[in-house]
Length: 80
Image (cartoon, helix red, strand yellow):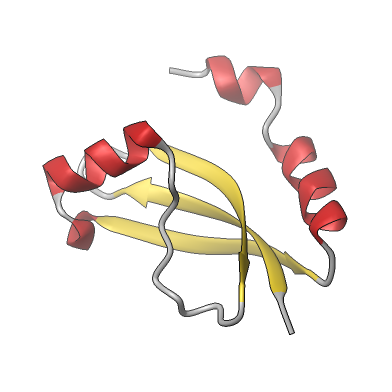
C-alpha cells in the first residue's frame, strides 16, 4: 500500500529548505527530493548535511497535493 507524504528537506549547512510531496512504500526510504537545484545542493554539501522531516502523511495523492498547496504559498516561494 502506498503512502503519500508531504516533507521538508533542510540543508543543515545553510538552513535552506524544500517542501514537496512523495509517494512511497516506507517512510524511511531515504528520499530527499528530486528537484535539479536540490540534487545539486546535495552533491555540493553532501547527503549527510540534509535532513528530511515528514510534515504529514495521506492515503491519497490528491490529499497530499491539497496539503502541499496550503503550505507552499506565494510568501513562502518568494522568501529568500
